[in-house]
Image (tube, rainbow, N blue to C red):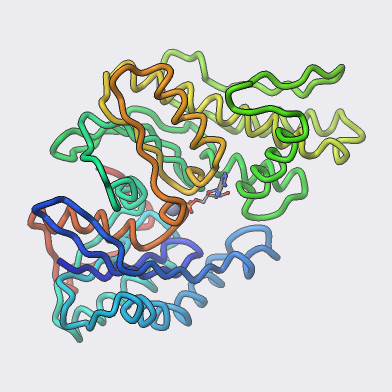
Length: 356
Ligand code: KG4
Ligand code: ZN
């Protein structure tokens, strides 16, 4: 089965062709094209919805064309078209959904609507070498979401933890803005944190930060709380107070990035292990844009080995971590296998679509 999938929920215009085999459960990516608007939005310090929508309209057809070319597939061979229904910016979502509506009408193909967060989750099912054992626990960390999700063998999902305020990616983005590092914040903070770790010979197996007379100490919000929820807005404020107290913080920028990232990762890893232990899961998965972070990937993989007896760790390849259309195709494949299908008339964007 071949699916052409489109993702336009925020500031990436993306199209992918995937090949999904129900018998083997294999999902292969034949093409995965992404036209990023990061450079355009960087000068505004974040995504400007109207600019994003206009860029999507300009880019969507060339991106789809390239995805089909690279996959060496003609529209006649496609079994389904898929697009992101939400959550996201409504004008961005509409650019993708309306294009898929028109193509579905012109090519006479059924369509599938995908929840963006479900797409991030299903990035873990692309190119799988070993089958996933259930129950699985998924930590989803993106710019807008931070969730701990349980998935059973029938792929039914249940949210068991969520952020009460800022998402993990938002913590990176807002922290970076405070430190003058621009948008998006995750890659910038992670790069500087790595230079500090290297210069201080810190590795993830040698955790303690070096002792300095004025060590940067930040809280680990809700790490010991008796629930599986997160909160990152207090951490951001704690960073702000530290920066205000320190007249020469610019000179210690890599160290601040390191301390801030450690606080975020300690909480994410700690809570994930707590949830995995409580629910006795067989698999732990990581997903969403923040899962591109190499320190988080390493630390969670190591914690699963050290702290959980039976669970196996899954993480998507880097190209499927931040927003892309292959993950939307992967989620759509599972919908198609379950017999779901829609007509172009039924498509409807939902900017605040919930997981269920
Ligand atoms: O999933 P995504 O591409 O878009 C949303 O659905 O929100 O996630 C974007 C988020 C941004 O907050 C960005 O700063 C963060 O992912 N991010 C990272 C890294 N790369 C992207 N955070 C930490 N480390 C990274 N390497
Ligand atoms: Zn995303």
